[in-house]
Image (cartoon, rainbow, N blue to C red):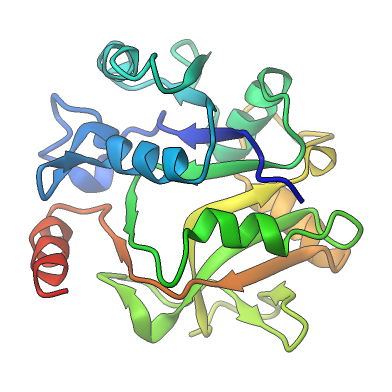
Length: 238
C-alpha cells in the first residue's frame, strides 16, 4: 500500500497528568531534549512522506494553532476545532473524519516519544497494512521495553498479529505506543458526542480486525513530568 499522506494528531487533551507544566502550556508544546512533543511527531511524519495533517484542538488551542502555522511550508494543516466541546478520542475521530481524505490514515497521540529501528516505523506500518483483514493497525512495544510506562500492558498479541484484551484487567504483554493506522469504515455509529476510541477498538477486536505491529525501536511514555528527565537521559545514553 502507498504510504497514507494524511495523519491526524490528537492534540486536544487537557494534559492533566503533566501538571503543573501544562498550567500555561498545552501538552503538545512541552519540550523533550529541546524539541516539542508536537514537533517530534511532525518530524516523524515528514520523514515518512506525510504531507497533510489534521490536528484537533481544545485546551490552549490558540497556542497550538500558532505553533502549527510555522509548519505551513511543510504540511497542509487542517484544524478540527473542539473548543466548544472536548470530545475525547473517539468523538474527536468522528468530528475529524470528514476532514481526512486518506483511507486508511495515520492517527498519532502527541504525548509519546519514539525512535525508529531499522527503518521509519510509519513506513513499516504502511507496508504491513492489509485492507482486506484490518480496520486498525497499532504500533505496539513489548511491556519490558516500554520506557517510563506507569501501567500494565494494554494488549495480548497472537501469532497472526491480532490484538486482544479479553477478561479482567491484568498484566498484558504489549503496550500501545499511541500510533495507529485507521480504516475510516470503523469510525461509524458513535454512541455519543463524547466517547473513547476504545469503542472502535472493541468492535475491531470482536471482528478479528484489530492488529498490532511490534515496534523495533525505542518508545517512551512522556505523559507525566518525571518522564521528561528519564527520557532525556535514555536518549543521551543511546
